Every structure is written in structure tokens, then in C-alpha cells.
Length: 199
Image (tube, rainbow, N blue to C red; front, side, top):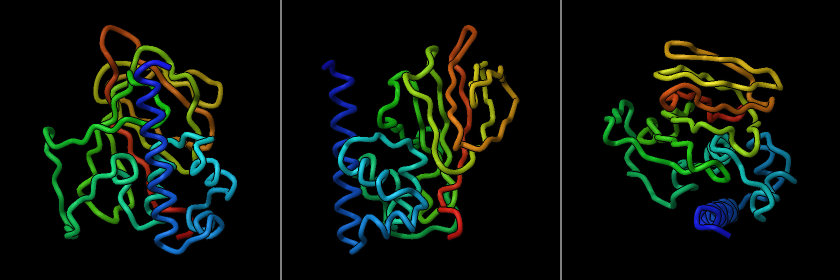
């Protein structure tokens, strides 16, 4: 196993441990967490037992249901407990996040982490030039605004070319993935809601 694979395995193991510990600390069964998140009990069990690698959007919903910040699930780092109604994240304050199971060529930078109990999560994402090994699909919807470059987006089997200034919105329960095309990596804003439906 190479170093990036070992690192991803270690990150996933830590995430699974934190989810299980938080769930037990809150006195929740897997069934109760399933009801709070809208995910199947079996899916949550697979995450906790390292049989599934959840995307960031799934971790965001789990974190919300557990009353915790998604960055804590991923990094183990606790944020300031003080609630702020208005927050600013300067460019140099963005938090780089390694997506569990994702390609190291894809760089996620959290731009919303300072706001506790938020309903939305936003990232500046830089895409690699190769499609990731597996498509993403998860509950919810996503809004993407292209900041620079050009990318090929494959959504539910159909390919689209998007570039700087384009905006697209989609149901993320369908398989989707993308790659940069052209001379430079594509950079874009991704926003999705972290609140479970019906909550």
C-alpha cells in the first residue's frame, strides 16, 4: 500500500471512530442516527465499520445530526465554542480538507467552517485532470459556480463542459464526477445544504 492510500485509510479510520464515539456519547442508536440524517441504518453501520467511505456532504449531514462540526469529524479539531452570527473567512484562513476516499489531486478548501450550526457548507474546490476513481452520489442538492478554468462534468451518464462564469445546480443523488480540461486546473465554488430534509 502506497503512502497516499495509507494516509486515506488512517483518515477514514479516525472519522469512523469519531462518528461512533459521538453517537454513543449522545446516547443514539444507529437507527436513531439514521432517522436524524435520512440515511439507511445499514449505510451508517458500513461507515462506522470502515466498509464505506462517505463524501464530505454525507459527513456534513452526520455532523449536523450529532451537533458537531464536519471539520471535527474529518480532522478531530475543535472550533471555538462561541457562536457568531456574522463570520468572515479570509483567503489565508481557508481550511484545506482531504476528502476521505477522494483523489489527492482534488483540493477542498472550507470557506464556511467558522459558522457553527450552519445550514450550508461551502468549499473552493480545485479539480485534477483525471476523473476520480469512483463517482460521487449522496443525499441533497449542490450549487456549483465556476471561478476559473474549464471542466468536464459527468452527471448521471451525460457529459457537460462548463467554464468560468457558468453556474449549475443538480440533484446529487445521481452519480457525478468531474475533471479539469484545458491548460490550468478548474477552480469552483461548491455549496450544499447540511440540514437533513424534513428537519
